[in-house]
Length: 88
Image 1 (cartoon, rainbow, N blue to C red):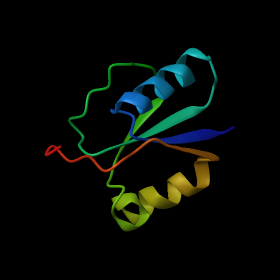
Image 2 (tube, rainbow, N blue to C red):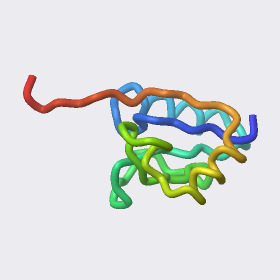
Image 3 (cartoon, one colour):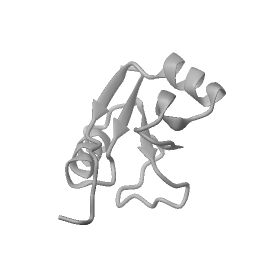
Image 4 (tube, rainbow, N blue to C red):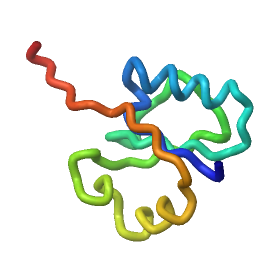
């Protein structure tokens, strides 16, 4: 595995998946798709790279250069993202 893209890393399941990836001591980079550059994760590691984007947009809402870099580096995607409504 060269790099992993993790969606939903701030949610309940995604946060636990991220923790497992970091604690397994893998040497791969972990790209975390987040909605805002102000996002702070509970877990800190030099492996974690934040990517600001949007699951609902083409190419995850990232620019074409960032998209090309992700495509070249990421070998695995772990999708934990979900639609969240605060009206339930």
